[in-house]
Amino acid sequence: MSTATEPTATTIQAVEAAHVLQTYKRQPVVFVRGEGVWLVADDGKRYLDLLSGIGVNVLGHAHPAMVEAVRDQVGTLVHTSNLFFHPFQGPLAEKLTKASGLERAFFCNSGAEAVEGCLKFARRFWYTAGKPRKQFIAFERGFSGRTMGALSTTWDAHYRDPFGPLVPEVRFVSNEDPDDLLSAVSDDTAAIIAEPIQGEGGVRPLPPQIVAAINKACGATGALYIADEVQSGLGRTGHMFHFEAIGLCPDLISVGKALGGGFPIGAVLVSSRVAASISAGDHGTTYGGNPLGCRTALAVLETLEGGLLDHVRRVGPVFASGLEALKARHPMVVEVRGAGLMQGLVLDRDAAPVVPAALERGLIVNRTAERVVRMLPPYVITEAEIAEALARLDAALTAVEGA
Ligand SMILES: *Cc1c(COP(=O)(O)O)cnc(C)c1O
Image (cartoon, rainbow, N blue to C red):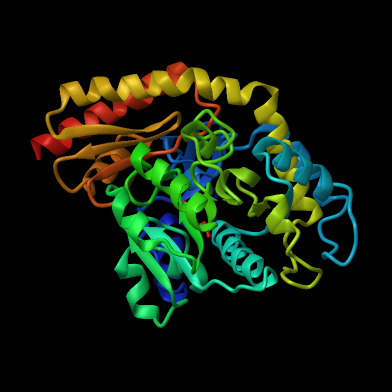
């Protein structure tokens, strides 16, 4: 629905170009509306969304449960600060702690803040124990976010180098060779941080030998394990948390992305022994865990529990086998990687041209780690929508191959 007074796509882009800090390279599309797995642009063109705003809109767009929760809460009570109680933070913490097996939750506003919290609480644990430990171990190709602490455990030097000095005592180890981790870990290691499936690093599941090495290293030195589940957690892979699927035992978990279904909220989940080291005043945030955020996240988790997680378990394998079929048809696809609704197509070349080719065909995908086409569809995607998305992706790959 466009009227003469609404700004055109050209005007919108020009105003941004003039005033917005140019930290993003955007695709030339202006979205104005969403319905389920579909996004609608200002010109009325419809796009099948296989990215969910980078793993965020897990209920799809304008899901009735989320609309109802936000509408009702925004007209009731939006924010109170953490100086007071409200009805929703406790129940949300209860759901997350029951689902994870960790004892307590701290709420923040983003994935990077959740990682910051994990790093701070890990340091606090050793400080309280009376034997402060400095070192963090992170993995090659790992991504933790863009704040100073989270950036320090983010591997890609392009993200880190312009902003140094960062948090000292971070050591990066191989995400393939377990001996690298085992020789790096010591009695000065506060924590090891790893994504159960590396997202930005190219949808790389943590190999079993690395899982075993993390468990061994933590057992031998007492180092804490931080599971960064910001992208892989909360049903994305068909599990509430992916660490449980691969046999890791975190002391701290960072969550974000899926948690608010589009409302910005993150959380740190903390084991009882780490929780015991935290005192009032140690950490805090103005917005974190406010009534609107918690009510919305509760609606997301209730929808997940109400059958959506089972749906992901059903459609995840359908999606993966459809991608395998594409691999068989396209020689430039060398691997299909991931779990559930977190999938990557690894190409034999830069995947960048696939993004505009898909966009042209009304399909949204993302390219990461240069050669990987990443897909994080909304959990509500149906088998028919998966078939439609795969047909469009097939056409986009054909176009790129022929170019
Ligand atoms: C996206 C992401 C983050 C950062 O989350 P933001 O909400 O962008 O701050 C951290 N860790 C992982 C694994 C992520 O995928």
